[in-house]
Image 1: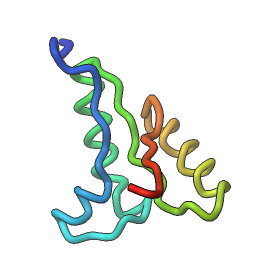
Image 2: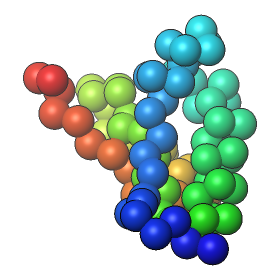
Image 3: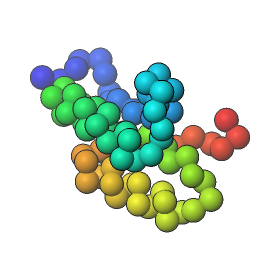
Image 4: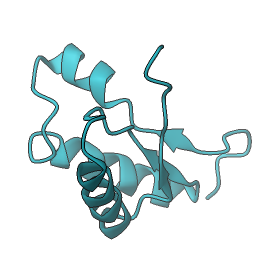
Length: 83
């Protein structure tokens, strides 16, 4: 079943981590990411992973993007660092 008016979902890692009072590490948020993928897949909508917050190391972005793809995300969010 496809959600008729929903084009996709984005994982808000910082918002989620703040609401449950946990860290932003990949392992810490693995369950939340997996739950989002399962819900998006069931609704037949694309899921976008949260932005990578470590801006000083492009290797971290690459690693995070590869992990997100392995989980089933369709892409990663991007936020301008000035925001």
